[in-house]
Amino acid sequence: MTAALWLASKSPGAPAALVERAAEWLSRVPGTGAASDHLAEAGRAALQAAIDSSGTRPAAADLLAADALVTLALEARAAEDPASLGGFAARVRRAGAEAA
View 1 (cartoon, helix red, strand yellow):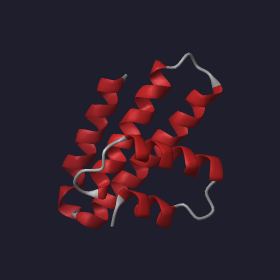
View 2 (spheres, rainbow, N blue to C red):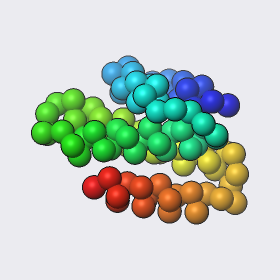
View 3 (cartoon, rainbow, N blue to C red):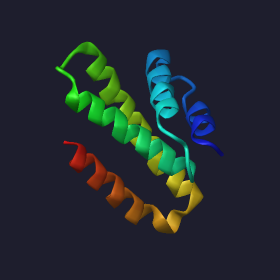
View 4 (cartoon, rainbow, N blue to C red):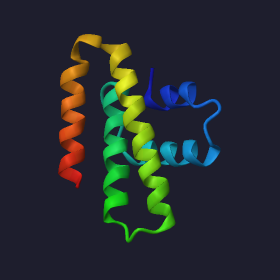
């Protein structure tokens, strides 16, 4: 399943603005490899944008999108390859710390 399909399948009931923002970040990041990798990279990019902003309202939307994308990345990895979830989560955490 692609990252975009994963997002769509997990977003019923979520605020439309959040889903749109997360989908926008997915479209900005090249999707290579597993859906979990694409979702995580989009989450890292959204987090970096929030950090780099001047604290404006769009930064809050980027931060919420980053949170949603990383959560979905972890869910996707758990479905794709449960045995690798711990290592994947550690890599995602390091990438987020590097963004800060």
